[in-house]
Image (cartoon, rainbow, N blue to C red):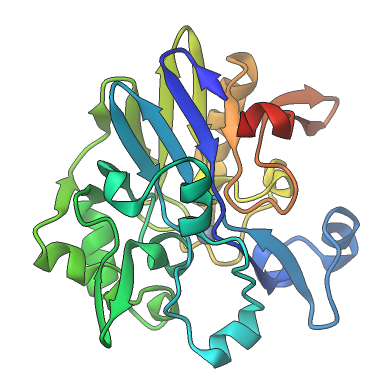
Length: 283
Ligand SMILES: [Zn+2]
């Protein structure tokens, strides 16, 4: 879709499945399965949708999906289906990995950073070899020093090769990556998790990453069990959604199985999404 001078295009790096209980934290299954059905292993369907932002002669990629480094065991646990990979959806957009100028990481978990590198002769190397990769300094430090609670999400092969190749630009604070495209720290999911806000032509779009992974996560207490600081997620989310509803922001949902983007409205006690027509998104 077009947003002022930018073109925003949700890409695909396939689908996977995560435990429904872990995806909804304290919400009982009796409630969440009405919104999101579970399979026989209690898993729910998730998409992986990095966002391409084109404008001002620059190709920006926000997150890069899971990539192709997962083991057979992981592929079974997470039911990875990578029929529709990032390379393929970039090609549909007329781009090769070398056409990407800037990569922004919302955080460094494997389902967001896995596609930053590829295996060549048994070694992980940067996939976007020309791109400057904007990564929050605090997130980097946490990813380099994981503890027992977050270790399974951080795989060094996904990001250390970027530093070795001199491709990392550390972000210390909120601010513009290019004029009109800014990063904002939310905390919550990880201490330094960030979202990306695009402003142009009087409109605002936000790539919400794991602040709002799916449209089933809009109501206040519907917060992932994966979040390290769920009360921080709650505080940020309440403030953000009030602003997003008032400002009619277009929200991109990275993991929603069906809805790539939409605007949010309040109806009584519920928050509902008006999905953007997929034909508008892919045009
Ligand atoms: Zn995620």
